[in-house]
Length: 473
Image (cartoon, rainbow, N blue to C red; front, side, top):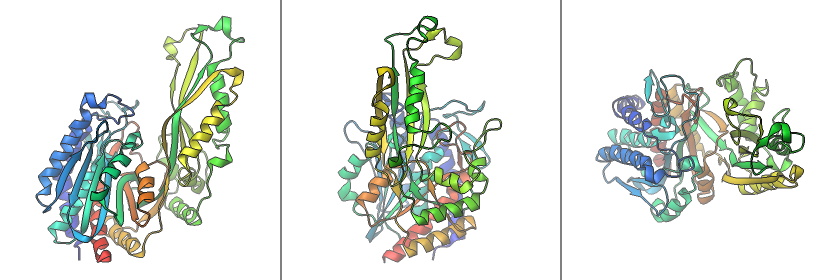
């Protein structure tokens, strides 16, 4: 039997002595995902991060007899770290994480920054520590914790990719290339998700898909005097607003086309109600609302479902507009908006994206030049039902590590790898969890890793790996 107290002490020491210092070094590296740094290969930051991860891991593989590490490089693609830890040959577990990062984003508090690690109590500020640079460190530490107590586990494959924040477009090629070595895992553990609070284990039951792209409206070859042209030449910004209204009701944020919705399974509705009851106002109070801004509803269950199962649109970038201080009396020739449309977990992203493109480009007002350029399409994922052994294991692990039972809730983000694995390994069980909780602000300013939660999640992984082998045996 796994000694949970001893495991907690071991994990805590490794996190304090080794993982946190390593993550501090990692945060300093501006290894932005290829979508945000097209010249990533020339800049060398991705290779720097891979080398740092590789060095840390190799120092610890000696404590895991027979373990191997390879940095796999397919031509023209981001690198991938493959770690294989031998175990019982009866089964395979796949553990997943990534090391590429989102871009800087504005709004960081003075003294903080994306590449400035800052440790304050249980919080390590900086880009990428929680999303999800900690994953490889946690996975290897969980295995080392089992080894310390001579607890057996199945053969484990750890995959750390470098393209997740760009939609994981390189990963399918690696999975196919390594298919013989990966085999057919019966359990997949993903550490790239979130948590509703820092008091209990949160298991992700679904992930939304995404159709992202840029919508450009062009009315002129060059800017002209607004006094001369306004009332004659239509505003590109006004046309953009008209086009977005085809997709979204600006009064309440509801997506208009019925084909962009999906039936919510009854069990997900019940889980949403329980999650809303557990979180209460924290469903929305975790966000840094400005002034008197209110959430889109005072029904917290509705808010949970809005962010997990219903389509929602966000305009995440605008081009063609000068800064107010630089803006003269000129009617602008074009306006471009970057759109991020979150999709229900069970909706096909390609089909949805094609429909959106046709909706936005058809019959443009004033016959303006309109183009929707696809950037990142990814289908969502709905988890299979938990096997009884896994449900029992997660309950035991959560009580041991957090002192509370686990909670289950869908997440609003996208992890393209999950949909791909769900299709490739339909019989596999999935444990999808993470450390991105209230105010951790993934992708935004002042992002942080909650260290205590990272330690506890590491303990949970170890317990599940131990129980998995017992079940497989």
